[in-house]
Length: 545
Image (cartoon, rainbow, N blue to C red; front, top):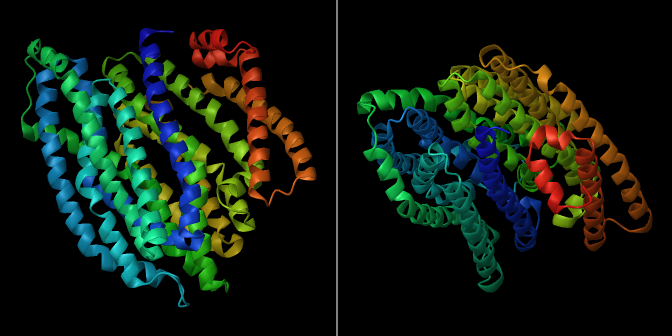
């Protein structure tokens, strides 16, 4: 394995580990939070706040964190460290100003967003009204002040190919957020006798406190590494200088695709938010059930599906500086190896995870929440979404790395148009599952177009990954059959509507499925194809492989 690929794998390991930890914590905490809040319909308010917040956050950041990472990687590869210093110093100030401005916009637009949400719903009686939705959006808006600053600082570290600070700060952010969410909501509701609305408000305000914790962590890393960065700046003899106008012209042109990609999934969720209840009301579904089903769609099932998706986000963040560097230096063979390695590494993890969630939907949903037929049905269909989201995130990041980011805008617009056109008809026909179907169809079209762009402009041959891809699918199916047998035995002897029985079933089936899959992947040599020398290092530690 080349030094470049070795560094890429090491960086990916850092971010992937951090992403798994944060997503695992995010998955675990929902169990007590669900119990404190009292059901899916009470979580809907949480979802109503977070979707517009995520969209505004992407707009506030203006794609700068990703663009800064790409800019720093590009000019560091040329040795122009003084130029990168000029950029990242000013970008942090710009992001703080942007955060304050965007906070004001979201705060004052909160009543309008609440009106839009209620107008898109049916005329029946809903759990949450205009005042509740307005207040919770205004509370979560405080996080918009600091998160763009935090994300940009992470982008600076990533541009220097330093992924430890991003990894550690993301874990710290999640731990702080969960601590505030659980302790705050429990104290307000169970100790002080407060309302569910107040519990939700504490939960969304936790994003602001958590971001401050992450910023403190990044500051500690920065002061530790400041001398090394200053040494590179002193040794800069390139003579490359850019004015602020030239720098920010490049940042804005690079940043627009980052914004567009960043808001893709939040916009798809917002389309669901605006059309879900209205479509269900057209076919006579009661209003209170609509809120419960929406909570399942955008909160409970999504939390579970986003665990493997977090790997895709980590891979996308990691690969961008490396792809940019290889492309700038016109090392196309190295670029092709990086792309194929990352795509296969992603799929070798995400595909079996998606299949596993599909077949284990009953014990999985029951273990974390409670037995609910609709929730289980939504999770079964939602599980494959993690594959297309993962591929879309990865391929979009690669398109940016090969300087064809303008295509991202057109691809995302196509995805959103397909989602918007299909959503209401599919929801009316398949209920909430229809929203999941439209997401899968729309993102699949985006993935196909992204691969075409990479093939044409990045000199990447899709045929190179077809054989290992077929192996991944075949081994995942073998795992599926094995798990189905074990799962069937438990289902015959245990009542899986009881949480403890589901937990036992889930634990055993996960261990059996993961063991079988790993053995096949390593014994067949597929692990060597994807992981390179690291496969032997894993074998030396895990003897049965």
